[in-house]
Length: 178
Image 1 (cartoon, rainbow, N blue to C red):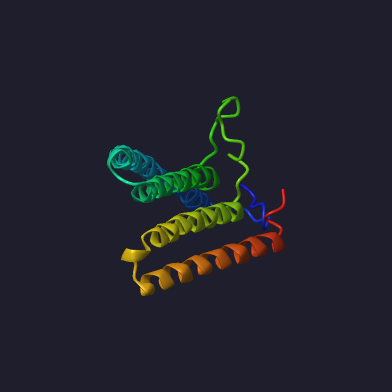
Image 2: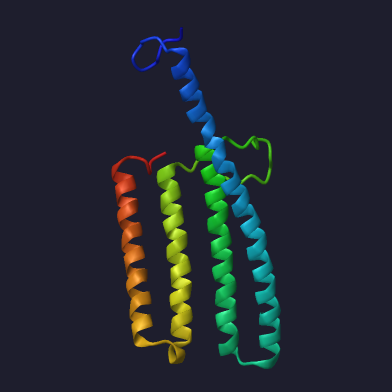
């Protein structure tokens, strides 16, 4: 019988089976990350459609009509980046490590983003996406109601404050230090 590293007591066969089953269940997350990869393809298609719209708009409209389309391209790009962060970090933190040590194009942050860092990166991306939506609302101020503008601004302020508090909590807990 094996000894438990925590208690020093012997493990039974049933206990080892339960522990191995629970540990192996982390692979149930892999389809979620594959689904996000498929979602990236969908975002790429939407991005292509927006590019076509941008080119069409730029030929037949004023600069003010082009800016919201450009902002929507930025929005799609930020969402795609957010999905990539979730896919890479989530897989590495909860499923398995990528075997890419010798890959020259591996992002420098891969393998170094812990759960606390992941939460901050996610919230930072969400704040940026929200800011783009708020800017779009201001660009279309004639079509935006005061109530919608107030809610958008309130949500943006709430997200920023949440991000700051999360970063402070991460720093105080010592997770933000490498």
